[in-house]
Length: 471
Image 1: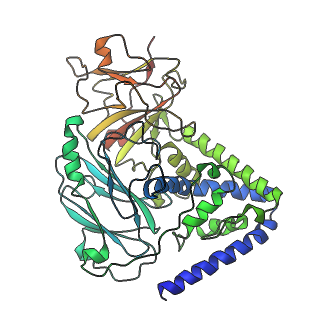
Image 2: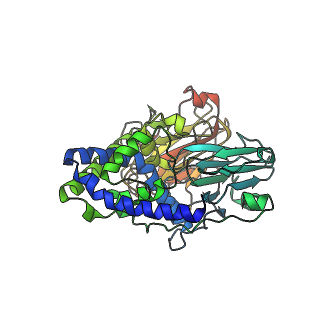
Image 3: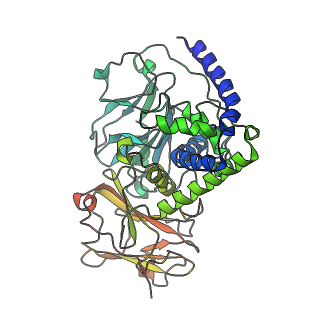
C-alpha cells in the first residue's frame, strides 16, 4: 500500500470522523458525557502537556522555538527563570532536548565515550511513558549507536549494527539529554561533549536514499483551550500518531469516541448540543480538580517531602491514569526513580505551605541527611506560576537557582555539615549568604534531585532533612 493511497485514506477518515461526531454525542445524556469527558481528560492530560512542550520547542512560530523535529538542540547554559517551556526544569544538567519524527523511518542517535561525568538520554512517548534510557547507568560510558523505531515500520532492521534498538508506541517521541555540569567553569567541557552527540535518519546512517514524510500540520496552540472541550482537537491530532493502540487502551478509546475523541477527527463545537458541550466542560473541570488533588498528595510524605516515585514505562503505571496525569502536572519528563529520585517539598516541618512572603527557612545537612547519590544531588527552588501546583525557577538578585553537591563556596563546619538558608531577602550574616537559596515573595516548592540514588534512597531507609522555619 503506497504512501499516497494511505494519505488519501487518512483524509477520508478525517472527513468521516468529522461527520459522525454530532451523531455520537447526540446519543449521550449530560451525565454520561461529563463522566466520559472526565475520564478522557485524565487519560489524555499527558498528551496535552506533551503537545505544548513539543509545540513550543519545534514549531518556528512558537516563542520557545529551539529546533525542528529530528534535530538536536543544546542548552549552551544551564536553565534559569526564563525557561518556561516545561515545569520543574533542572539547572544541573544542560539539556540536549529534541523530538523525533519516526513517520518516515527510524532515527539513529550516536553518543561518544563519556567517562568523566554523568549523562543520560531519557526517551518518552506521547503518553509520557519513559520507554528507554541511554547513559551512564544503563548503557555505560562507551560510545555507541542507538536506533529508534516508531509504529508501523515493517522493513527489516539489522540489529547487529546498533548497541541497542528501541521501539516506541508513538511516531513522535521526545528525548531529553542531560549532561552533568560541575560548576560554571565546567561549561566549556559540557558544550564540547554536546557537539559529539549525533542524530541522523537510518537511511543516511546506512548510506541509502533519504526517506521523507509529509510536513506536520500542527494545530495552532492556545493553552487556554486545554481547559474545556476544545482539548479534544489536540488529542485527536496526537492519537493519529499512536495507532495501532495498545491493547490496554482500546476499550477506553472506544468509549471516548462518544464525545468525539478519535484519531485525526476534527473538532467543531457546533456539532454538540449546548447540554452536551456544557457537560464535557464540566467533566474537564472535574478532571483538573482531581489531577491537582492527586498532584499535591502524589507520594508518601517524609519530613515534609513527597517521596516521588511517579514516573516510568507503561508497565509502571498499571493503567493508573490519574497517577500518570498528576506526575506530568508535578514535573513532566522526569526520570524513573532508579535513574533520578525526586523528593518534592510543598510544606515545612509544621505542615504549613512553604511561602517566602511569610517565613524564612533552613535545611541542615549532615552525614545522615546528605542525599545518597552515586553521581550527584541538588536542591532547586520553584514558584507555582504555571498552574498553582508547579512552576518555574525563581528570578533572584544573585542568579542562584539551586544548590548542589558541586556548588563552590558553601560554608561548612569541620565535619562537613552545612545549612541551606531559604528566604526572600538576603541573610544579614555574611556566612549565611554563601549558603543562601533565594525564595520568591510568594508560595514556592523545592525539588531535591538525587542522580543515581543509592539503595538507601530507593528502599526508604534514608530520610531527607526537614525544612524548618527560622525563628
